[in-house]
Image (tube, rainbow, N blue to C red; front, side, top):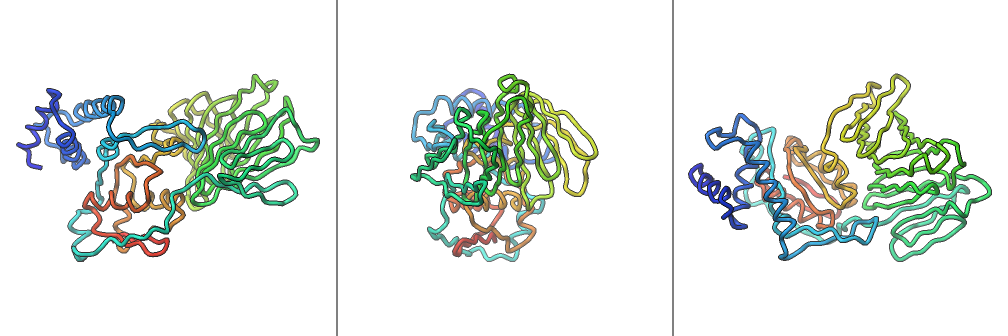
Length: 384
């Protein structure tokens, strides 16, 4: 878009006259400039424009009554609505570490996007490993009940009033292409993302520390406060750290194939500790521990972006495609590879629905014009 056309659209936007089509063009123009150096200051403040555009977008989300795309989060029946307009304009863009033409120079323009139907959208599913080693498959439509635990196939609930005589441990494993919710015997709620594993006792002893272990993967914890359990603290152990809480909400991301463990605090206060040091997190802060370095680094983050997976969304903000590929591979149980390794460094900004087909998401990235084509064969997507 040329500058003069942008100025016309900007004037219409400021006066509240922008229609849906013009609004999308305006967002696309704004998002095509990813650094302050590239932004033309004669157009006004880039940050101020962004804030006003996002505010207008939020207003349109609240007021829009046209075609709605809805999905059911895996932890409840609540319907979260996203408008068709928002699905298009919610900051869908790509910024590259490399020039577009450099990446595409040797790739024929006519490469097709081959579509197949054997890559499924992720769903509620898990396996429950009992103390005796037996394994129970949990999935929609299959009910399960034994002792103080029951499942309707979409969630697993432990009843504190029906305690087992022996305190045993269970392991809940979420495969690629899965997600699941579990309510522990102390009423702590845990949402588990794809390719995750949680170990926990089937009951807790009053007054004693409640400890669980996130063996790997990602989990969101809503911890039952210690005041309801005779002051008993709640601890989450991972490979490189231990999180100590009194009653709070936080997210831990500790995948096996990643070199970093992220702990993000939403509410309350937690202590992050390892063999070397101990640090405290406040709301909207995130700790980072690298597996090759025991230092604990703390920074401010956008919590909503971090925990968007729990709400049924993918939020990618300046994320390289190679990192996005990991997220998508876990949810869709598919492999994503790059014909040109440099493409993995292309940065993408976007908010997408987890109930979209994988092909639709890849097509969105392709339509941003920083990849030339993709090919789907069996359960492997090749980005070209």
